[in-house]
Image 1: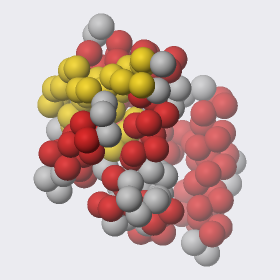
Image 2: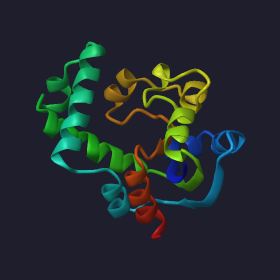
Image 3: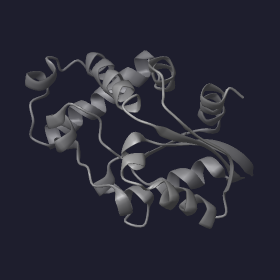
Image 4: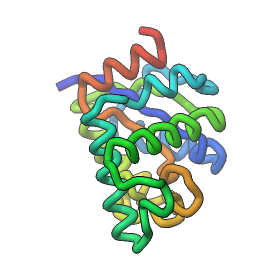
Length: 177
């Protein structure tokens, strides 16, 4: 099933000089790069990139709260709340700030089952949990406890759409197509 998906090499991937490695991983897997651009995200685009629905905020908040607990940290002491939706809003703000902190490379990738194949190639969002052969498993060096302590998202190098519908929405948002 031929699909297209959206990939973004985030500011940490750019700063570490991993653009070529990341792009060549997709190409070696038989996927085709059909659009590619380096941009500096605006706050408006970055805000629209991350959903602000109650469901997304609550899910993000629960993941962060669980991560704090697993790291033995006190979420209330750090964030001032243990409400998942309120935590999700903090996470959203930090993600937007991070995306706007530097250049990103936006990519449209096409191929057989592109959404699933790209997600498989990039690995788990938490680098130390990612398959060692994935992009995040090979090059990711951040951990949630460090990111919590520094008040920022986990640096995981790359974003990829999670569904075909999300891919089309993100391609339209970033490329205007």
